[in-house]
Length: 553
Image 1 (cartoon, rainbow, N blue to C red):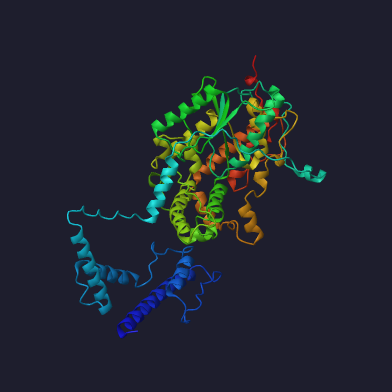
Image 2 (cartoon, one colour):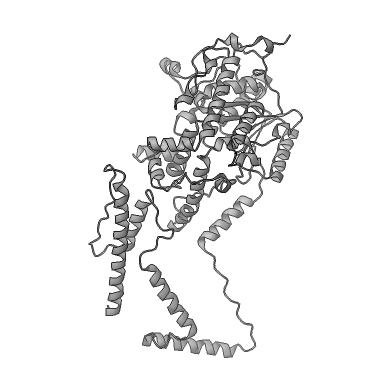
């Protein structure tokens, strides 16, 4: 090794040590503010001669991802200088000035190459000039183009319904008694406007993400055939379950919304239907057919829904670093304080396909780089009054930061007047019971059977083989409970969602007590504070709720 190369190597080592010391000081200062319960990262093997500086630097950056921020490209100290030198050498070779400083072997190789090029040129006089090589694009851009082409490929809508629940497992008497069961529907006052059955042409479930939609859709799918058998005497239902194969647009422009309503009209022209989609409340969709289209939905506590989205992205899809939600919030990676609806709302959810287990490290790196930014943007969007914007719809008033109360009032109006029923995940069995009595031609099923928790196995069991394997191996499968200061933060940025959730919960509980004629236990709310208190109407008798003026003369 020459003295010049040794000096360059020593200089790179000194720059690396200086950069490491600066990072280490920043980490120590960070943890000094957070108490002694946290532990610093120990980088082993720094004094060993075979340890690569790049390995150490990568380990440090991976650790800091959960607590602060690393450079986007993660360059090793000194790498930029080496790149500049290589680029300068390449430029000198292009200009022909590299020959004087090259080795004798390099000079001979270049001279032979020049002679071969001259001979080839003289032997092909009059021939066409070779075209310049095609410009290479980056791997990331090529991957994006393939994903874009895949999403934009037109495909027909699927008519395969979700997989219904499997056969009920045998239970002991004590297990059956422990099941949470819906109130019986034997004395429903069908003369009351809020309890009267609807007879629409179709049902639209514009489902909110991470709110139990897989559980309720599986139950809906099973009820279709049961309803056909018990109500219409058919072995197979004539209701078509439409799942449109479209890009995951949640907010629709005016033309796209008109096309979507037209597609629902086409579904109705072909026959009775049930369809679902992640989409903001579509105004006017209930008038897509002359017989009407009924809207249903299912909501969840907004704080629980936000945490569920984080667990899904970090521990199931592996798109975010699998650390506790507190670590993401405290470290600044999950920056929720500087989000604005005008710039942060995700109108389209870009779901990048997950590579197979046999994929190369380069494919996984592409996927992680692209999906991380998308998942973080989606997480921030869904944790900021998302349910309010969802039920408000597509209008500009739903995204007006100057007057956020308008969006909340319109969301309440749509829930009250546009939907057949909006249930709550925390009271799933009574939500299913309300769907049965309000939409009997679709979801009544066996009239002598009352829904219970066993009808929703996906809601109470771990259905993912990946998560089952992770839990069996002792790996972390979800975040720890949030610290009080982070819980306060989520409540502060979801004030309208919390108010709307308890408004929907009150409507659901009132309709359950009104239509199922029960004075039983009030179900559904998790006690998150004053908003979770039992409303005044819950202590009244059912006869007080059935007002005389509502009875037809």
